[in-house]
Image (tube, rainbow, N blue to C red):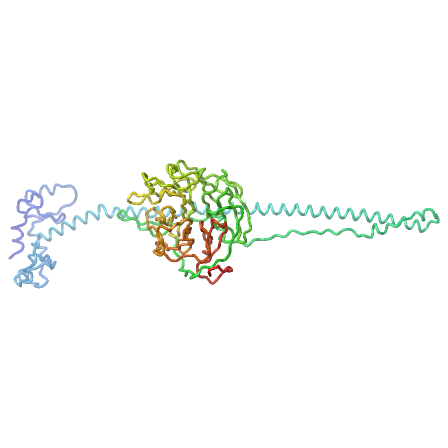
Length: 590
């Protein structure tokens, strides 16, 4: 069978879909009847080349030779084998059970698809890539501009630090000048007294010589020796000369004081979902936990009847707060370095040290968040209708605050004890975590994806940001550690290991360490739970004789500090294996 003649018998016009199509447009790849040719050529959307279908097929014949029978033209296309086939292929029976299509129909369909793809590439896809390509220089320029802004900010901070150092140095120089004046004045006073005495001695000598030379018995008999008066030599000045005591420059503390760069965060957005590529800190090499944690020291405190919070200012100094209006700074020897009274006279509900070394505290009754700088207190945030409880400073310099609605006060008596109302729901969504950048609220975390409250309405909630940017909340009333991602999505709830009854787990303080592990104090079971960043229980710290453990923090070397409510002591504990031990005090149970 001649495929050219056969094709002309069955091919219909692509436009009118009725008349036989003796013509073919090689540009648009469509079949045309004689009546539609004129109409098609009148289109002004591009160049057309209309030829007879017979002519087109004649040019096609060379390319449609059967691959298995080179002397035979292909008439059909086997769909299953995806190959063109000739009459001999059909007679062989190899394709009897396969679906077959006319070769011209397949050709027309594929050509139409190719044309459609070509148009989309030319008019849509390529232009979008051109737009993306054109935006690359803009992005590069933005990078340079932002880097220049960062550099300017760094230089400004450097100048401020230089100015502060120059001011300190100038102040010390002024002290030196003043001490020099005092020292020289003392020397001059001594010199004057010595000279005065020497002049007096000279006169005595002259008087004595005169008496030796005289014969006047009366004058000589009146002489009284003054030798004892002058035998005592002039007192010698005892001066304690001032010394300069340079402190070892701690680069980490200097970096905290100077400021830091927030992490770069790059997102690749595709089809509505986001793939984060950088931002959260990478985990350091894993460190083994000690089988038996070591009590390094007990730091005693004074002036408190109960301790609630502890926060590391450095590896050598800690801030503490409790049930009074005073916040105190101690060194590891238990020496009080300084103290600050709250601005309102209320107890601080929680404290935290910022990345720059400032102290922030939450005033529940005053509904405020305050910053302590030296002896000055600045109110950063004043809340309306909400009371702050726990707070923490994040790696980016933001503040995270967990707060409860004033509407929930009906659940508490005068002593702040929670009581249940059978007609109300404890989880009524009246507690939320809010992120603040400066005094600006930038994020609120309150419900899960199903609209259920993430946190209970009870008191005693503390929080900490993990190194993977998760937000970890110790929810005492719920008996759970609730962990959400930086975007506020619930990751998991930890309610204690199987070894203890779930209802007995009572988390209070919470902190995270350099390994991304989460530590929470359990005041019912008198221990510390350590879980990994995915909520898997790792171990207890329960061998150090805790008495109502409450607030927690870790220093830069992952030593744990625990604020004990009852004893008002702060045990320092090593719980990771390390070649360096700061001096272990053996626990009673060790």
